Image 1 (tube, rainbow, N blue to C red):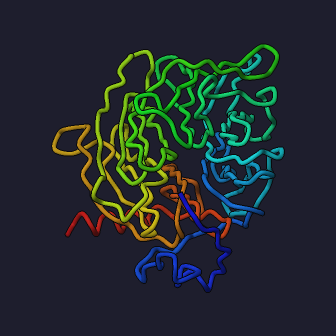
Image 2: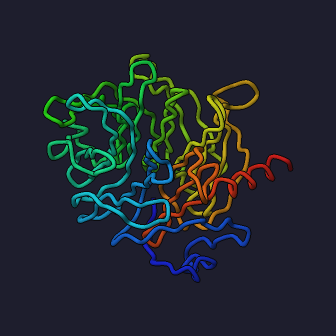
Length: 351
């Protein structure tokens, strides 16, 4: 969680826009693309892959304020669309092919913190299809939704939203909702599960789902990264892994999953106060899928990164092996050609 919002210029990157923030390391990778700035405070990005032409894929990012919204960027970082005004949208995630009024519809789901709702938009047109929003954490005193991640169950295509909040009880900090399209063109949500241990120290904001392997990862800030089964039908709320406890300077923040194969790849987690990403093996280590040892620390030019996302698809042009997108102070998102990230991982592994 960031405490400061600073408007940065390109020339100021090297000094992190102020001595009170962690400096950008001299060996930091440089962003391939920096997006146009939003009016207020960027927080979390998600990548929508255009099935007809990957070069026309989009970044959907939150602008977090009372009169904020979802901003849509092309791969050159230009703002090409935005949502209706939203009251402090926090995090956002994307899923493909929800059946709405008989049509498979790609969706972006964001938390709207000041209204205690999630908001749902069709993609790529950014039309609201949630009938004004869906209440979450209903009946609880502790609401204030923040994090969200979408899980698509491989065997039947059912889509679920895992929603976090500013604070909540251990054991049921996260609520999982099944999303269902209606014949009238809207989406409803039904809570199907409550889970997630919490240290009580700060908050849980960053959440990510690995659809293919069926895991939910989330950051218990100032503590570590936790891992659970994603499929609510399995009825298993056992914590599978708790890792990264000693690898971070302070807050554990945005999580991105980069896939190199059906079961392999990387879990990247923002080491916010160090301006780096900590990298772990998606497949685990030593033959144990739930043992995630640190592989590398990748220094980036992002300043106090909150949210992040990644794709391994060939996006053409500047991104032949995909990219990492990360929020940065200065109301922007940074896109890094994956080759830059991979080179640092390879160098660390060889040491």
